[in-house]
Length: 396
Ligand code: FES
Image (tube, rainbow, N blue to C red; front, top):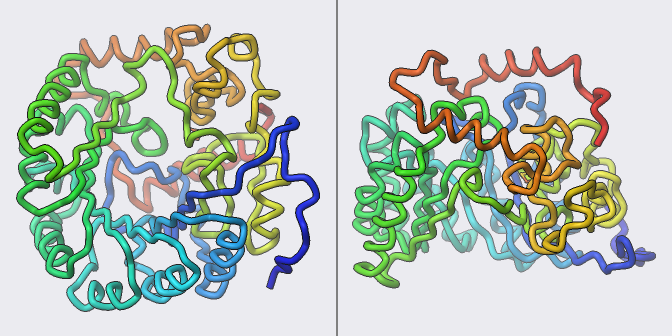
């Protein structure tokens, strides 16, 4: 057990107080019954198959709550594959967390929903891949559409507030009106229409998934029309794809500012996909206290503040607004996580984003490159390919 009574010497960075972590994501497992082509889990997840046990998760939750964390998502992979999920939710509620289950719905039976109700779970986020069985089942490489539809009814029968989530891309953007109809008919209080962010498996499949500018424009118009019709009965969040922006997103609301993610094996991550960045060693909650991880570790301090920035970010008058954008995207597109996110049109690498959009606008069906499903065999192949570079020489 970690001693929580030790005072923090100086929780500040570059002379500015470090705020406590508010938003926790507990990725309980990388195991998943679905094989989604846009999954943000690391492509080499097969190399990280170890999972924390129940006591280790509870110890982490206790420490994080003592630091001030308040919001907790249980995610994965599929968190329902952990049979201690209900116990973890109950413990988190006792500690005072607001709890959210982020699930594909596979395995969410009437019995488990009853147990989660008893554990006082606050909220459920259920993912669909599309409004049609055909595309839902293709994108997840499973036959799960009917099952998910039944689960949505069960969630409402147990009186849980429900967010329906659908990742958007080239395949399903033309169905956006039907996705909204489906969410409304299922009684979802919220609908999250998040355009795919190109990390992990989505990055591998980027040329297949990237929408055209016309598709996005039409989809936004449909969303606006529905917002006026439906109003507050189902709140629709439409997250635009940043490749089509000229300024980057303030990713995770700043590195080490709000978000603390814990991977299944206990690695502490400042964002969902940080594990893909070279030159960083992520501390593990089984070896280091959450307090030390958050306030003192190199991984969490590396991109805090603005001291790490290069030009053009360093002298940019907007640097405190977007904080240079996304480190993972900078790495994926420029091979240097300390570069400006190339979504920014001030970045010398912005042309790399434009090239991707140009290719998307010219793309003809069918694609030569096959779509890659998230599964263990593919992950082992990625792991094999990435292993020699691990801890490699591309230091930020
Ligand atoms: Fe890692 Fe943006 S996803 S910093």
